[in-house]
Length: 114
Length: 114
View 1: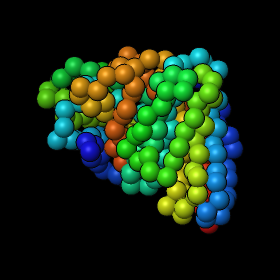
View 2 (view 1 turned 90 degrees about the horizontal axis):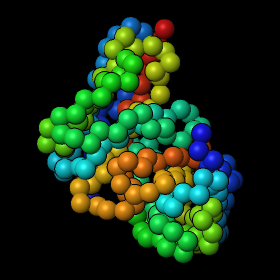
View 3 (view 1 turned 180 degrees about the vertical axis):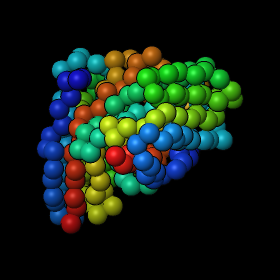
């Protein structure tokens, strides 16, 4: 299994509070991604990173920010959590871009915003 | 936004039966991937198809990429309880370079009853 650790695994927070989710990898892969998974929507890309301090938006980036200060860590921040951000969040990594570099996923963080 | 429509969303069959899951789009994809996800875990890549008309087999699972690279199917022969899980298709939109900005289908939750 790819060395990907997501923390925390579960979190309950109140509307309006800031939340940071962490993804840590031991594979030294260049690309890192944050997805959210919701029933009926599959997985949707929030943000991704293609190197230290290099990040870009995905299809559902509103309300989220990311940072990557080290190769191994990719942080996802909800500045002011809303109930619509209740979801399961997955981090993924890939060694390179393109079709021959598959994604490896972490085991997810279940976030509940009350 | 490019969409992948996956069908059926739910499927419950008896052990030993055959089944097919479909993944359709009006858009062309450079490649199509199939993942399987267990409860509490992240998706795990099963296969990547790249060439239009390509067929790949993984034991009792057969994956096909449509000739026009707009659709794909997963066929399972003689399903077993161990095949139970959430199956996700994911496409890499044509023309995108660099990061694996996959578009995911909604998923098919498959239950194989003993």
